Structures are given as structure tokens and as C-alpha cells.
Length: 377
Ligand SMILES: Cc1cc2nc3c(=O)[nH]c(=O)nc-3n(C[C@H](O)[C@H](O)[C@H](O)COP(=O)(O)OP(=O)(O)OC[C@H]3O[C@@H](n4cnc5c(N)ncnc54)[C@H](O)[C@@H]3O)c2cc1C
Image (cartoon, rainbow, N blue to C red; front, top):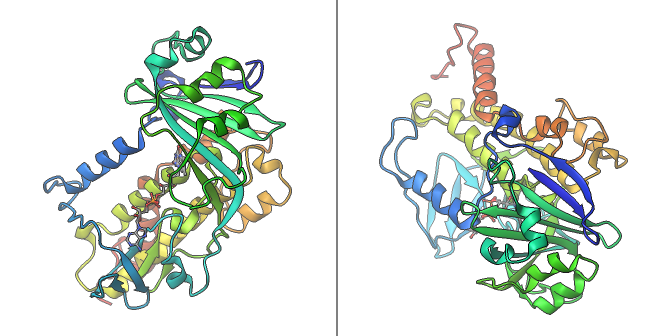
């Protein structure tokens, strides 16, 4: 369910139901605590050999990469060691240093003047306020996930909240204009006082404001929001770049990690161990071409649409910019974020299927015989 209210008087602005019975495209909508997501992904990566998932990953912590030579697939670690690999996946996030090795130019990542406050509160505490309790009530009893949001257009503030951990915990995220001196140290999470947050949220309804002072384990953190110029290619030599390093974006459509996870599905499909013979450079190169063909349009669509804000396609020039990379369908210009037409484009995408189809098509073209890729060239 998406419920968006006016911040001051709690007038309902948008209501969209996307529980399990609202159509297949939302049957897998999840609100997840970041720590739980990281733990879940790590468990999947390191679990014992699995027929479908392949051999377990050897996760090595504290191994900072200082330099990548993309053409040769060589990396230098911070402790001075050099390693050479068949494929290097650059995934060092929004503050990527390695993107400069990838492009050969200074990073184009820059602050936007917008920041986000984030904190978690317990739903038990939220429910002590009768107004809040009503806002988060789920009459159908089927919709544990979803957003409740408040917007103050005049002050350019959007507060989005969603339940996670089985509905026990409420995640709050407030996008606002960066306040003087806020988060200057530029960490992933810089602490900010409740008084400061309260001051920014002066126009909000008193019940909603209450959540600023509710118990929160780590207090409230603030984080600058960034943009970067789109990349024309995510591949260089024996390296590719994924995630925020390739396409950091505004959180407008909550799509950053979503598209990065799609990319993981692309990698899983294209670089399935059984499909590539050891040291087959020719096949690797063809697969990397397919990778670019699949990911540049989709990731740049997500980034450019997120960076243009909720009115994305109505913003002059945005559609033209998107069309430089992406030729698929777009929702009508006035479609609200998370509305059905919008979800069809941004979220109803099966990357496993797209990658498989693209591989099959490419293999047919390359081999010219029975869809079998020529592995020995
Ligand atoms: C406030 C906020 C809310 C968000 N909400 C959502 C949401 O609801 N849905 C969604 O889909 N996305 C959301 N996002 C976006 C999402 O968090 C990012 O898109 C995602 O974390 C990107 O993953 P990543 O692996 O590319 O980068 P990161 O998660 O930043 O990971 C990068 C990793 O690389 C490591 N690293 C950095 N440099 C080096 C180096 N030199 N050597 C080795 N390792 C290195 C770092 O330690 C880190 O572990 C949100 C982002 C923010 C800021």
C-alpha cells in the first residue's frame, strides 16, 4: 500500500494498493531492514555448494582495493599486493574511487544540495499515538509492507516511512534541503540532533512530528544525496562497474539497490560457470558486450528518472536524455511514482528472462548454427 498525505493537515494525496491480490507485478514487494538484507545476501553467498547457486563465495573482509588496471584485470590492494583476475567487478559504491581508474577521468559524482535523515523506531511506540495508529492500521490484514509518506511541497520535504522486520520496526527517511554544516564529514551516516530535525519539520502535523523524539537505537543520521553523469558503457577491458559506483541516484523511486540486484541477476546468467571454458577470452568479451547491452539502458533509465524527481517525464529534457540510452516503453508523462503504469516500466522487469533471451539471440547471431556459441575462437 502507498499512502501519501499532505504534511500539515494529513489530507490524503495518493492511495495505491499493491498487496498480493493487486496483480502479479507487486507480489514480491519487500520492505527490508538494511542489516537483514546484508545478512540474507551474505548467507546466500557463502552457503554450501548448491546446484543452482554454484560454489560458495569466499568473502574476504578488510581488503581495500587501491588501484584497478581494467585492461589487464589487475588490482593492487592497499597493502601493496597485486592480483590478476579473469574479470574484475568494480562495486565500491557512491564514493567510488575506482571509477576514476575505470573511466580514466575524475569522478563526476557531486552533492545535490539535498540530504536525507534516517532513523528507526519501534511500531509499539508509534501505535501509542492514536493518529499514527490509524495511519498505519491495515484493515485488510494482508498488507504488511508499503509506504506511508507525508509531503510538504512548499518546503521541498518528503518524509517516507515503511515497516520492516515483520512489521515490528518503522524506518523513517526524510528528504530535505541540506542544512548548513549538516553531515560535513560526508560519512555514510553522520549523526544529527533531534532538535535540528524537528526544526526542519516545523510544518508537519504534531502526531507525525512526535516520531522525531521516539526512542531510536542509533539516534538520527543524515546523509548527503549524490548524482553523477551517466556512463556510456559499464565495461572496460576485463572490468565492469556495477551499483552506485556506476549509477548513484536520488532515492525518488527507491530503485538504487533494486537495479544493482538486477545486475547481479545479469552476472549470474551471463557468467554461469558451466557456460564459459577457462581462459576463453573471446567468449568473455562477447558476454561483456551483452552485459552492456542489457544494463546500460536499464540502469541509466532508473538513474535519470530518479534524478529528475517525482515529475520526471514532465521535466523538460528528461525524456530526451533517457532516450539516449533506453528505447523501451515509458509510462505516460503524468504517471505518479508507484502508480500502475509507472510500476510496469520500472519494477515489473524480469532480468533473468531478459538476460537469457539476449544471450540466446546473441549466440544465434554469433554461431550461425543451432544457437550454440563458438567457444573455441
Ligand atoms: C538513505 C538511502 C535510502 C535508500 N533506500 C533505498 C531503497 O529503499 N531501495 C533501493 O533499492 N535502494 C535504496 N537506496 C540505494 C542503495 O542503498 C544503494 O543503491 C546500494 O547500497 C548500492 O549498493 P552498492 O553495493 O553499489 O554500494 P554500497 O552499498 O555503498 O557498497 C559499497 C561497498 O564497497 C566497499 N568499498 C568501498 N571502497 C572500496 C575499495 N576501495 N575496496 C574494497 N571495498 C570498497 C564499501 O565498504 C561498501 O561495503 C538508498 C540509499 C540511501 C542513501
